[in-house]
Length: 343
Image (cartoon, rainbow, N blue to C red; front, top):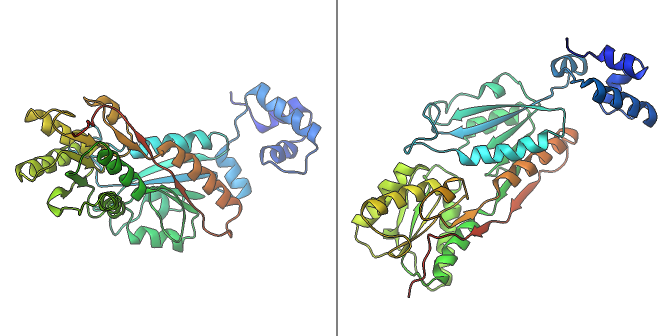
């Protein structure tokens, strides 16, 4: 039989209303009484009924998470699918921070193509007190609907003027990847960027181009490709680059999945990494340590993004009128085995 509010009140020798005040962090309870109630909660292992609290206080205790994807029904482990490591690693950070609160979390994957004129269920039915929005594929219809419904929201991995956001310095992340290749003597550096509809692709191209120009190298359009964030797309675009016969000694990829696909193609045609060509990824996902050779990549602080986003959203719920806040995290190069010096 589950422990009730009445059981806690009886154990602590107080009224049910006093227990309720303690659970809701009210300042109207004396410190010694609060400690007695908390001790009773710990002893009885009492867990508040979130649904009942929502009915009593008329305040939602659930936060929502929307992950925009093109990969709604396919398995995320397939070579031709998006692995969604960004989503899972960011969620780890959110969950660790949310565990310190009384809020629960529900998530929904939202297909940006199939559902372009629709809304996620958690938005349509006003199920959440606030939202986390993950990724750079969010459409204008969704942004407008969240704004109209006045749902507090934090964007993770992208930015919008209407919402708080946590992101990495994307241009700098691409810049330090290419700079690393330049420092190792590479001058013919190819770039397999992300898809056109990703809001991050332009910033990655900017960082790539800036690093080359600083080294006195004019970016060569023949060395630039666009790919989906899948291994298969990375494989296909690496094949296209190689068959174009344009000279290259290194390739920077806009995700670790793209890089893994590019590496598989190079393996298939017996091109050695890093002896014959160097490869750098972007994200620092689980993939980067599993491929052979281990992939040099750029860490974009995904778990920290989740932690900071959670703090932002909880603060926004308490103080909805404060000005919009944007947090930009610093990327870091993770050096492994996929880059060799060019003499």
